[in-house]
Length: 332
Length: 283
Image 1 (cartoon, rainbow over the protein chains, first blue to last red):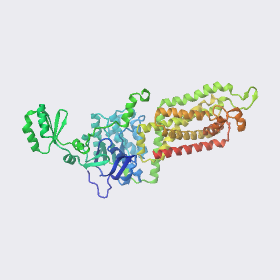
Image 2 (spheres, chains in turn blue, green):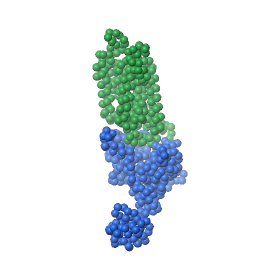
Image 3 (cartoon, rainbow over the protein chains, first blue to last red):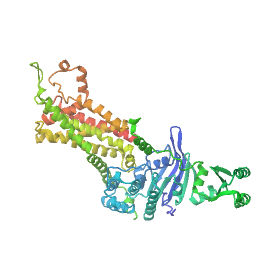
Image 4 (spheres, one colour):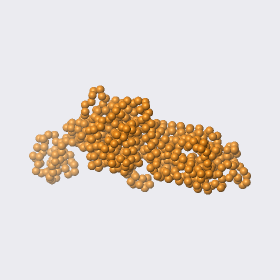
């Protein structure tokens, strides 16, 4: 987190945001401050309220109570100024399939009122950064999903936005494209003064973030640097597969409060090294497999939410596509 | 690559105006580009008037006479082709306008709408750009029909062309707004096709477009020739006055007060755009 002058407002500030859909509470009094130049990650299971929070930030939804400012501009009262500072990449693609790569960027520049000379310059620079210069005149429909994402990220920056909001930027991409997308985000960050707010459920992707906010049931569960989160909530564990049934039963009986079963393996949470010494001294010769797991964000995440981050329901776009694949309404 | 003076410059009135005009232009341009890249729309825009003018018009031409069993009731001093020609322009504009609203459903379904909604452009201008774009395409499809004028034996005086085009533009704008009002209620592509046909065809057939209602007759006399419900429906249909105004401009034949047409068209534009805007702001 880069230091900002004291008179500078934070890049984004949420104050007491609440939002409910009918009787479901999506967000419950959430307050957050995101500093200028920070790389901020929102992590949470599906339905935790991450996307709702971002939609309130992007002025698509209005909160029931509370306020949000973007670089000092209130998103409700001074929406125009706030939107001018935001670059948004939505979870679901929002490109126009029938326009070319260049036309999509040009459209964005015009809608955000970027003067022609700056527009041309920015588009050329950004196309270069996301390596789509050669695809300039390709129709968006013909791009791969990784390229589409990169195009959307470039598009969000055509108007010199200072706060880049990415909602699940790598969902639905293969591992290689995910890597490429992150590499481009890193490069953009290095070249511009950019605050990045990202939601994801790939825990490994937020390791590089300045701060991680774990959100669940509309509330902030934890908010800290990845290293501190790991130290505080993540636990180290010992995973082993006993050689026979008798050993297994003995282990379970002796360390019942620390053991959990995962298939044929047993996993023990480790309080200290003495525990490991004792266990291995006694059972070391009667094991088939043994591994030591260091604390991870995934572990911290599990400890805080009780759920795996990847337990995802299909999004509306996936559902629509699946529906189309089965032949639409006519085959039912 | 640090953001230049653009991002930090204060918002002045002239800068805001320029950026708003640019935004409306971008949305308009996108609609027009999308329409020109969709060959199906263009084929429809050409085949529809050909069907109505060359087949229906020429086919019914000999039967369009005021005499019934030798008793003269009502004579329209035009051939059927000439009579139906302005109505076909209205039909072509109607179809294209209402269909252009499909792009609204499309944008909502595939997320593009969000890209526009988070931009600094106010909702009213987003809608204006969209309606202007759809109306431009519809207007162009109306102009395509004008090319057939000589086949329909319609000669348009240069002085009338301007007024005719103005009426066509207003009709296109009003109907595109109507299409968007319909699209707000129907969220699927299939549903929209069926529903828009259910709106377009009755409006068209009941607009005195394919058969005249004698302007010389009183209502009581007209009811002798046609059933009362039909007369009533024709008279309350706003399209009746739009078609009538176009006929007045292009072939100088009016069944109703010529001023009515302009008034009804302006009213349609204001009313439908107003409804569309109110709904768009709420969503």
